[in-house]
Image 1 (cartoon, helix red, strand yellow):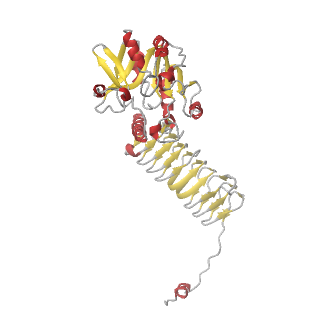
Image 2 (tube, rainbow, N blue to C red; image 1 turned 135 degrees about the vertical axis):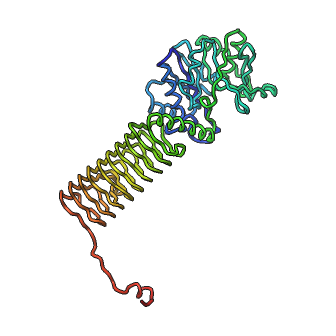
Image 3 (cartoon, rainbow, N blue to C red; image 1 turned 135 degrees about the horizontal axis):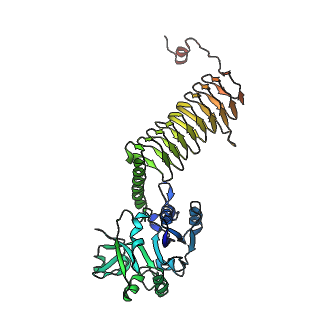
Amino acid sequence: MPHKLSIVILAAGKGSRMKSDTAKVLHPISGKPMLSHIIKASLEISDDVSVVVAHQKERVIESMQSYFSDINFVVQDADNFPGTGGAVMNITPKNEKVLVLNGDMPLITSKALQGFIDSNADIAMSIFDLVNPDGYGRVIISEAGVEYIVEQKDASVEELMVTHVNAGIYSFKKSVLQKYLPQLSNANAQSEYYLTDIIALAKADNLTIEPLLVDEEHFKGVNSKADLASAEVIMQRRIKEHWMTQGVSMQLPETIYIEESVVFEGECIIENGARITGNSLIINSHIKAHSVVEDSKMINSDVGPMGHLRPLSHLTDTHIGNFVEVKKSTLTGVKAGHLSYLGDATIDTGSNIGAGTITCNYDGKNKYQTIIGKNVFIGSDTQIVAPCVIEDDVMIAAGTTVSAQKIEKGSLAISRVKMKSIKNFFYKFFGTSS
């Protein structure tokens, strides 16, 4: 439920430590850009969410607009007002409390932010205590609360010994931002405007500054590919734990990859090594070991082991066996046991697809449809050259290339070269005797 809270997400940085041409906040976690996870959590508690952008701003905005329609985007003047303080200067919050989040914290949840919602302090800031605080700003705390924050680049030797670190999340009363943002200075080692400097200014005016101890898992920043991998492990654990509580059985779940957008219904079984991505919907189905399901739908069906459903496949009451690949096809009540490719096809109830069957759907320029009716038996090593319609109750002999555009109901289709046997050819070829 939304609270009277405005949220500002800082997503303007370059993320140079990622060593990538992609903006840091667009790197994916479980199938979606990390920034989208933060926005999703924010919208659960606020109806006023702003995202501050600068680096690759067009790409960031376009990406987020593909997921959300109710986000405000603010472009930071990073040339004249760099830094976290500069990022917040052009924000006009609707509510009296403003929560500032970082765009590289994809593991934040709305529940983890509850302390900021409950706080009545002028400023509340997140802190955690690290054995190795390297890379973080240090938080100097006394019996009276937070005294000030110093960035590592500007810290003294004594300050670097402090293990209380800034987790990077703050809530401010709107009046605090309005008063102190204009007072920020960039007279520091990086010539940047630090949002953290507001702490010292507010402290000098005896405002209340509440430290909130948070856990590192939820407030973990992603600054490198190693951080990205660590965050992925945590996100995957959360996703799989959620679905197991909903009744999904998983064998060796640590080996399974499930994207955030996947949905399960009913009683499903996922075996080890499976990968399920996109907007896949799995209903009362069984995904066997090392199978891949991409943006597809399964109802009362099974796939694998080592099966592959490529995007826009739809299975109902269907068995897809090992080494079968299905792409952009609808199969209802079908059996395809092994070693086949079924692309751009519609196959109806009771049909059996023999091993080695291929729908030849691409002529080098265009894709074509194959439509197979009910109770069709297709023998092994069959090639169906699309476009083709195979009506109900048809048999296709093994080794046939179906080049006709239509096979009528009740027919047998067979296309084979008559076998020739040349006696003693082996011995003549190799110059040996029997």
